[in-house]
Image (cartoon, rainbow over all chains, first blue to last red; front, side):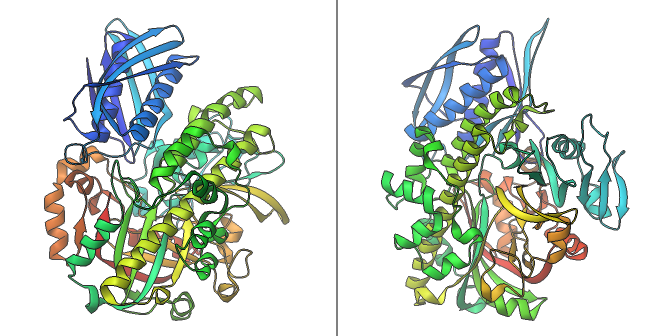
Length: 135
Length: 477
């Protein structure tokens, strides 16, 4: 399981790989948090997100958009997520902490999750995706 | 130049119909040969994708600051027939009415040069960066006011003077706004962020007028050599981001409902006159108004800081102008000899209305609209004026900035934030941000030269140079 930032002129492009769809979503979620708040994040406060969307790409974009909303209005920075996907339904259990001006100020605010260039592929090695975060 | 892009003029290039399947009109890019070397295939593809949308008129246009975005390219402009065309959040972006304004002052360079205390005081007074919340308390009733009346609400609430409104595009608010099309989630995000700058490329910069190219226009705009000005660059914050996210979803269903074929999901759209299209337009207008109110609130805070520190009266700091960079507007333009109402999408582009155009303040009617082009951190910004050529050729539009040429990953490998701050200080420019990371992301080298970008629009004639400003200090998110 891993994610990396790929060169993109204007925004942040992430490439993630994982053996399962759930793990792929979890990695992309961690990438989003790292871009926004840096690598020093802790768990403790729990939140649950439930999403229903027609395809995997929409499910991921809607999930991450909901994370942006919760993180901003509740002032929470998340460490990780446990995700389960059942067809068109996703449930994510997030663990995080309150935003800390000292540890979390090094990132870039993500304005939105773009569908441009968003593709989830699957082969014998597992799942892979490219996604662009608008910063 | 990239294969398939044909030169048709000194600074003009065409993407012929057929570059991607389904193009209805050609693409047209205004670009110098040397800027052409940084043109990305992804940006050209996006420009061609826009040309496939129903009802597009004349050309899918790109300004010289074109670069790879999502949906439309950054620097993209397209006008659509109101009867047959579509409206798309991909042509506006997540940061609805990200825009820029220039506040003039009676101060001279010698008054503020090297004054770190001024930059520190602005940094303290204007909330910036990730997680920033406003010190100005916005109630849910005030939020309704911000969305309905934009800068006009802000002036009514004491954050400015009546004259400011005459110096804003659209008088500081779009009448089409309807907060019933804005979700509760968007409103929740909007309340704590009124009067905050945000992060990324948003900034508040103290600048000095270094050069004047057009003395008559500069005089009309209230600019004099050596004068200190403040440039404010920000948008509609989380409220606008959420409105884009929400309506993108609705419009994706609408794209299928109206049997529209799109080459990129981010170009989800609906007929302008459809309920879905009109709902997006009303919500987008509400976000645009929020952004105008937001910039007005930051202006108020800036004026307060300058008043206190330099004993300058509040009304001695007139607003030169305020322009939107990311917006869709209903405007009248002449298409093939006929005057018609069209929906102009500007995604990283500035309105550039020429002399005599509607919506210009009467005292600027013979000059043209002020156009504000921020440079990258540490480099010159420019003031231009709108032209009749822009009305004829680009639906009254010009460039919006320097345009990135380097990714954030490349930028971070080049120089640390600390090095950049030290280098800029040697040039007399004080930089203040919450994190070094934010500074490294926005290093001057990651952008095209703003001089070269504005020279192209000046030479093509879609806006004309008035003045150049150089930075003295900047606060960033």
